[in-house]
Length: 359
Ligand SMILES: Cc1ncc(COP(=O)(O)O)c(C=O)c1O
Image 1 (cartoon, protein in one colour):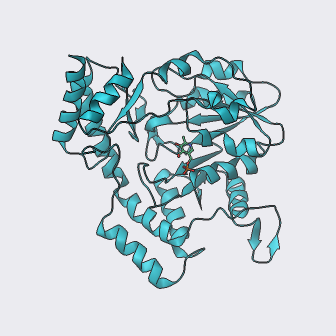
Image 2: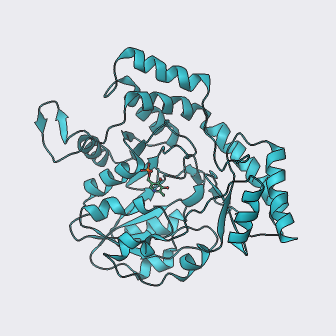
């Protein structure tokens, strides 16, 4: 494809950072992971960050540390990546899927309220596509019902809600550095962030075999650590992140200006700073449009074509309830190429091909 959906940054600074770690012979539990945690915590504006082997394991640690397991229920959207819920399910918790808001594609707070039961222990907000969920009412609901509030920030590095970064609002939040994300570590990686020192300490212990000191294991933990090479790459990428998000916003604006009258384009709420992990439109005759763009060397994506509650693996365990908005939008969504290295002409070309299709 001439126009890729995503593009990764491989600057000299990234390459050199990785080489330096290889030469150092210090591959785990060294200065890079520690520095990346401190720098990421500082960037987000939280007290503590723990680097992890993926976004999935970051969520796993949160669910384990907060006790979202053994029969507990938790509220989550179905319009997300499956890893939002699977880690807690492995530990015996049950997701209660809730429909989304049609405009932001994030969890609908009124629907969430209806599904809380005495077994509910947490509400999970996913800041999908890089747009924050409406955090204030969600957090108020969690406080009223004495539930944990967890943020899945896997797609939303640097996104803001009412002027504050996502990840600062939950009891804990998980980020992913999967290669397509807004920033990566050139491999699988993740980060847990929290302002609660007790939760942060527990997550740190759990991610390293349940120990504080070398030979003493206080808890049943995991090896969910991030390697030093990856952390070094993450530190370099973090320095570029603000510029990349600004560029993503410019690209989205260009798309919106050209496409606004033809398809439903993403319009950020007045309280949001969108990180535009993906640029998702809603399109009539979506599959035909996708094929038309493919024929013009333009890659597109679906995030996600099958909602989690209808995935075969989930249906085996949980009888699906109806989620009308989710089930409708998954047939209309289409993500167009979005990355900070796109030129204005590329964006214009792609947008004009969409217009051409509808003509
Ligand atoms: C919303 C969401 N949650 C969780 C994850 C899991 O992250 P990872 O792939 O790093 O395990 C991802 C990304 O893949 C995601 O998009």
